Image (spheres, rainbow, N blue to C red):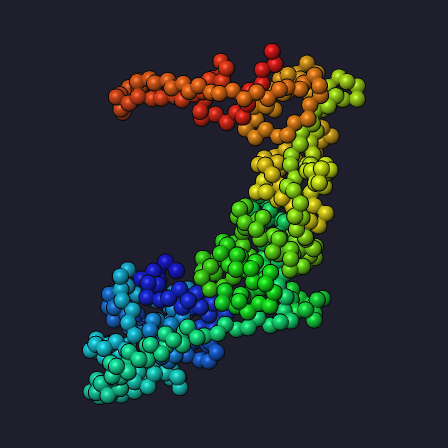
Length: 458
C-alpha cells in the first residue's frame, strides 16, 4: 500500500497486521467516500463504525466506535486499506508526514471545527461515538456546544488510555482446537523448477481424515496454545520465514504464520527433525495433486557425491560414473543417482520416503549430467587429460580412479606474486592496475581463479 505510507507510522505492528487480516476476510465495507471523508463498517467480533476526515494535506482525523484511544486501531487501518484498494481515496492529497489524530481524544479546537463542518453521514450505527452522532445530527450553531459538553476531562482520558494499554496486554489468543491437526507439506514441483524449497501448511480435523484438507490460517499469537511441543517449536521457527508470493505476503510476518513459505538452506537441518517428530510431514509431487506422501527425517550421516572412473568391458575406453555414498557405523552405503526423487544443493535429498542431509554443492549438476546416460566414455589415451580436468574443477568430487590414473595429493606452500602496471590512457592515466597470483612450485594461479588443484602427470 504505497499510498498509505503516511499512515503506517501511526499504527502499531499489531494493528497493521490485524487490519490486513480484516481486509483478507472481507470484513470491511465502505459505506461512503468523498473527496475528504470516509465512512466504513468493520465486522470483528462485533460491528464497528469508522469515520475518517481529511482536514488538510498535513492533518487527518479519525474516530472508531471501539473507542480505543492509545493508538489508531486495526479497524481504522482496515478501512484505509479497503478504501485504497477500491480506489476511493486515491485522490486524497496527503503529505508523507501527515498526522493521524483521534477526534475523540484530540484536545484541540481543530477536531471540533473539522467534525463540525463535515457533511451529514449517510448511515448511522448504534456503536457510533455519541459525540460524533450528536454533532453530525445537530444544526451548525449547536455543534461546537455539544462537542464541548461531551469533552472528556484530561485526567479521565489519561486513565482510559492506561486501561486500554493494560487490556491489550491481557488479551488472550484464541485457543487452537485440540481435534485439528497441522500438516507440513514439501512442494516438490517448486523445488524441481529450481525455485528453492517451498513448503505449505495445511490443516485437517482428526476425526475426518478423509475429509477436505485446507490451507492453514494461524495467528502468531496462537502458536503458544498448540498442544504439542514439536508444533510449537516448528511453527515458531516458520513464523520468521519469507512468505512465498501473494498480495499480502509482506504483512504475514507481522500477524500470521505464512501458509506457504520458502526455507533457507541454513534452516533445513534444524527444522526437519522437528517437523518429522510431529508425524505429519509429507510431500506432494505437484501443486494440483491432492495425494500426500509421508516423509521422515533421516538423522544419519550426510550423503556424499562419488565419481568413479573404470575401464570399459572391452578395455578401449574409460567410463565415468557417479553415485551417492555415506559410511554408517563403519559400513559403506551406496545410492544410485536414479533413487532420489529430489536432490538440492542446499543440503538435502528425498529418497524412499525419507529426507536426509547432503554434503557439497554442485551435486545436482553431476546428477543431471550422468543420470540420463550409462556413464560417460573417454578414450584411453585421454586418461591424463581427464584426471587433470577433474582435479581442476572448482568443486572437486570424491574420486575413485584405476591404478594407472591414481595420483598423490601434495600440499605446497604458495608464494604471492603482485604485478603492477600503470594504466595506459583512459579517464584516469595516473591509475595503477594490479594482478595478484600465487606460485605453487612453479605453477602460477590467479587469486581470482576458481581452480581447486593442479594435476602434474609427469
